[in-house]
Image 1 (cartoon, rainbow, N blue to C red):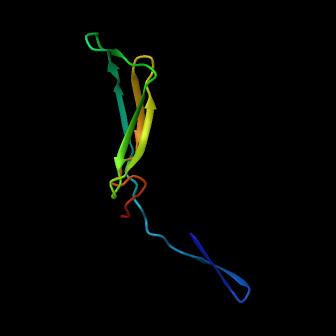
Image 2 (cartoon, one colour):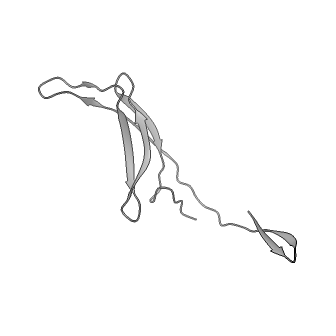
Image 3 (spheres, one colour):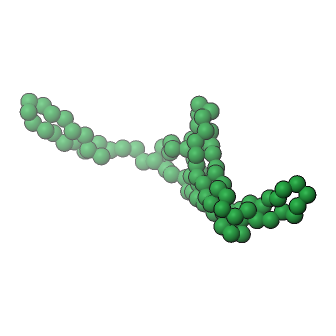
Length: 91
């Protein structure tokens, strides 16, 4: 990363070393949505949306990812694997 400063009308560029960060590997999530009205047999639910949420350190929900179901009720998505979504821990 570069830092810029202006002194006496001159622009100076200085290289700044940033600490390395580690990013956790993503999580693959798969499943099948099934459902039925009371008394009926469970069937795959097509065209549904499955959403996954996490809580930040303040207790607010953050959308991690979502996926539609196919004609057989199956969904698949990739979610981040971090303690606080949107914040990677430095190592």
